[in-house]
Every structure is written in C-alpha cells, then in structure tokens.
Length: 155
Image 1: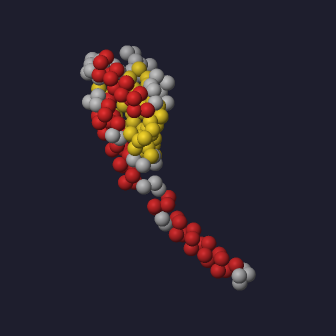
Image 2: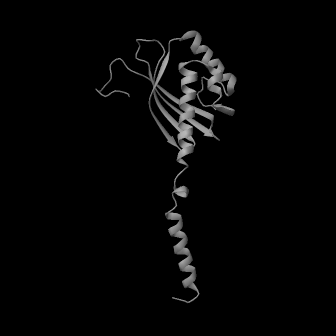
Image 3: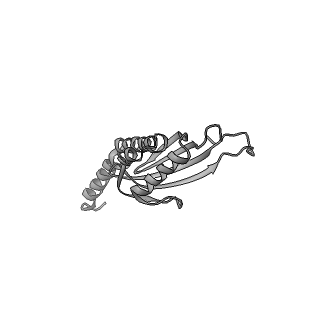
C-alpha cells in the first residue's frame, strides 16, 4: 500500500468505528420520542375523552394541519370537532389499545365508541410533532362489524 494512503485508510477506519459505535447518531432521541408519545396521549385524553378542547390544544403547535377530509385545519377546527362530540355524543369514549413512536410521528390504535353499548370504530391516528407539539394529524376509521369474516378481534 502506498505510504500516503495508510494514514488516510487509518483515519477512515477510525471514523467508521466511531460512527458505528455512536447510538446517538444511529437512533433518534429516545427521551424526545417518549415525550412525544406522552403529549399525544394527553392530547387524546383531554380532547376526545374529557372533551376539553382548550386543555388538549396546549399540546398543539402554532399550526395544526388536519388531513381528515371531514375536519377543518387549526385550533378552531379542533374546537368545532370537540363541540360536536360534546353535543351529539357526550358519552363517547376512546380507548387507546397501543401506541407507536417513530421519531416525530406518534401512531395510535384506538377503539372509539360514540354510543355506549355499540361496537364502535377501529381507528389508526397518526400525529406529527415539531418541538414536542402536535402539528399534523391523519386518521383511518373502520367500523367494527357485527359479523366478522374471522374470529380475530380488530384490537
């Protein structure tokens, strides 16, 4: 090997080892991910279960982009949705079955029941956070069928 290439190869190998051994570079900040999860869980409990829009909005950033085609953007859109729930479905309840975090995204698998005694809906909610605040929301909603094609539950 050329004498000039040896130091370069040694430096490259050392850098590779340093980067490979550094979990901070390889993985997102676990503390921030857990803080994101807690923020979304609190937002959901305050908003969807307690129906307190203002308390829930403490977890929302300066902007709130809503990807559900039936809901408006921003804090006012969220307030309208919670007012609708409070008026039409005061006894509705959402049970979070599981949650996942991937960087700035928090995903919830939810069993939402608007009227007690009904089957309700299976929901997957996706939230994007920036600086610990919710800034975007997507959801997919599927009614729990009376007669499923299999014996598995949706939860």
